[in-house]
Amino acid sequence: MDQHALEVMDLRYAVLESPGATDPAVRDAAHYGMRLPELWAAYVARVREESYQMTDLDVEELLAAGCTEDAIFEMTLAAAVGAATQRLDAGLRAVREAD
Amino acid sequence: MRLRVLDQGHRPRQRLALRVMRLVSRTQVDPVAKVTLYRPELFGRPWLRFVESAMRGPSEWSEGERELFGAFVSRLNLCGFCVGVHERTSEMILGGDAGVDRLGQWRDGGFPPKVTAMFGLLEKVTLEPDAVRPQDVRVVRAAGVSDTAILDGLYVGFLFNTVNRLANALDFRWGSDADRRGMASRLVRNRYHVPDFLLR
Image (cartoon, rainbow over all chains, first blue to last red; front, side, top):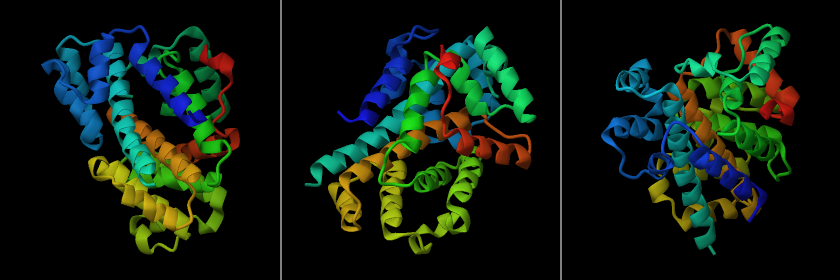
């Protein structure tokens, strides 16, 4: 495994498994684009695919629903790294299959 | 910052570091620094290790070309913050030939063939990841790009696909154009290196 692959693996492990305000299983779901509790589903989808449209309201709604800022931070990281990983993996797969 | 903890919630060591950064730079602190110094075991520590390696480690791509890939992906993700900083870093490193004003017309932008080919793959991977095919890689290889360089380019793409989303979601912004230029200057000068003791 090359150096960047190891570094990205370390990053993903830290984001998904470090102790935090959210259950690692929920962070996993945000990362892999899997089904999420209704509370998080819309926010994670926005981070993954429409982050350029996000406003203060996206965070305010979660805070009003009782989420802590640490939880929002963890889910934002999981979603962002997950969306980037999906794209990286698409490229890596194409390189492997291009022989 | 959209989350107050990223402005005010740092542990003492990191809070002191941010204060020193503010005093030394005499501008607002880079939002990326605030995020990476908040609970660094969660994100900042492994992130910075990766970023320094991807952007300034050994590669067939020059440092300026990797900055250009960053500005390119940031444009695709509509991340104004990252575009502003990394177009500036590209210009600082590549000089007048950077071509950042031609990134919007990159197919005819007069970039070197290898860079143009890598742009094409980064665009497909960023905007249509489910449609990426081996043929997209063969096009880049045909332009003379080695598989090692293709992988390096994809990892720069991963970097910016991550940070663009964070910047947009958490509302990164600079206070003035002087701040933007200052952030870019520090990135070029410090080469993405952050001392380990700040991340403990």
